[in-house]
Amino acid sequence: MPVPASLLIDDASPVNLMVWHAPREKHVRDVPNALARNLAALCERHGVRGKFSVLPMPAALGRIDEGLNGVSAARLRGFLDIVRERIAPRFDITCELLTHLLAYDQRIKCFVHLYEDEWIARASAAEITDYLVVALRILDKVGLRSNGVTSPWGTGGSNPKAYAQGIAQAFWRVHRRKTSWYLRDVTDDRPAWPWVAWKDSQRGLKTVSVPANVTDVFWPVQYGRSIRAARARARAAVDELLSRDGRNGRIRRLFDEGLPLTILTHWQCLFANNRMAGLWGLELLLERMSQHLGSRLRWMRCSELARLTRPRPTSTL
Image (cartoon, rainbow, N blue to C red; front, side):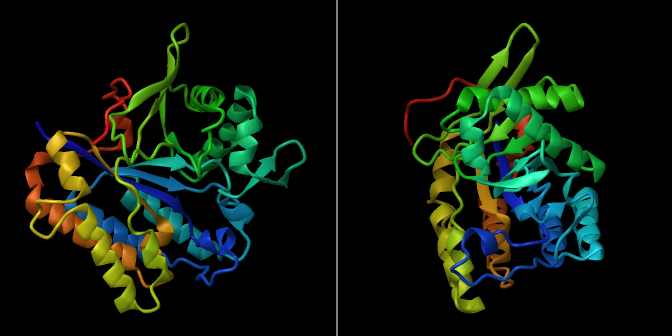
């Protein structure tokens, strides 16, 4: 039986979120649309599917359906066109809350001095529903219909029931969708199949947690001082996941156990401050997976994986 695989890409936007998340470091702000085009071509070539998050209000710069401060209308339109035409046919599109930065107060139409994960930790299910409804409607307006939510940082970890319930209610309100899913958990020591995080049997609503069983090993490539150094880090990261001969590494162990290869990475890592070292590393990884695992893999969207729920495990790999 083929082993499921899914590529999970966080934080996609015309801008590099690291500029705001790590202001003491030097990061390139603008992400060229060539990254989205090249990623789409790579995934098409290898038959890759998964999920791709798009920020509705990236870094509190504005709304992608109305315009972003410091991003030309042409570049924003180009980014969204590529996502709609080349990425959405293979990937589920998700919001990543609204900003992946400051929370947005809908009552006063203003950002507040509180990060979104902290706001979610204090919010009720009804408040979370209202918040996510805004995100889903912004995506709808730019032609990107979402069926899941990506959770920045540890969002929902201290308020899990309200968070999962809010997600389910938001999708029911906007899309009349009874089953939704979210990415929140990175299961380094407890790899897992998706599990039901919340359900309302009377209304038939449920939220499924789709975990990342493979953490983002490409994070360090952002800090290579040259393309050569960044690629060296990317190659080392790939070796950690799947050795050159295909016999060792995290992905090999998961594959041998028949567990989903849910592989997490981030837009800023693929970009790697315009060195594209993460994208280079991803290409190397996909080539190795195709060579050594090939037809024994089945690339899937997260919404497809969400149908394959099992009890959350307690064992370790």
